[in-house]
Length: 287
Image 1 (cartoon, helix red, strand yellow):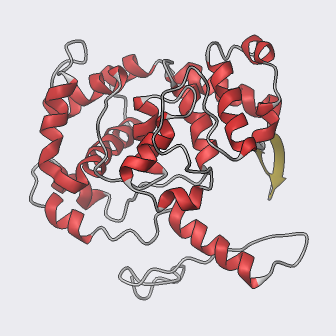
Image 2: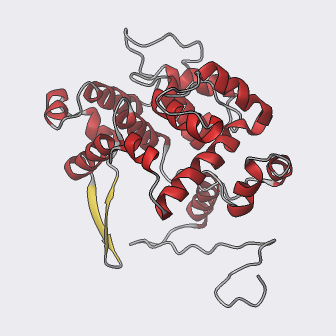
């Protein structure tokens, strides 16, 4: 990429510059912690070389990783924010999930404006922890209302908030410090997430991948994804999906990169949809 005026670094030595705006002067310790957090959340230090070596020997993955060279999974938000998103995704069409998320932002978020752009900022956990379940149901959150409150209360109390309805957790002494959770074993992370009220196997799978960067964690496939996977991996009609057991067995061939490989193929079909109409996919999205 040498010679291209707008680049801050080279392809082999990329550089990213970040401007931080604040009303008060920020100390070096804070800025260093922010730098590390940005690197983690955007996966900037993920070494994909081993994954690419494996993928380029795979007939399905090769053209995709070639097209998306450098693409890496990321989630810019916190663990709490992802949990809220996971809850509104449960048992809902894309259109309904979008509605619920937008409604929550408009009711509990903070509208910010910068450089002519208006965006909603997430609320603090204490906001929903104190919310009325009936109020949330009136906003059409359905059964998710209780989950939104319970999960928020967990973070306010800063300890594992177990209720009589939640599953037992042998690791329930783990606290809600997201950074310390990143250092725990995969089993500990999974058990912690399952101990939270309203968080099930599908949500855990998303969080283990996007928040905790577990590239091989793949134990459950939701019915909706099962239909899409049947088409893109097995060329089977979404109306007659391949069994989850067969899918999980098929994905084992990608070893420690199995979930990352699945996500590359997943991103590819959504990229195709962005550039052209994909009729069979539109029927499943209902946006």
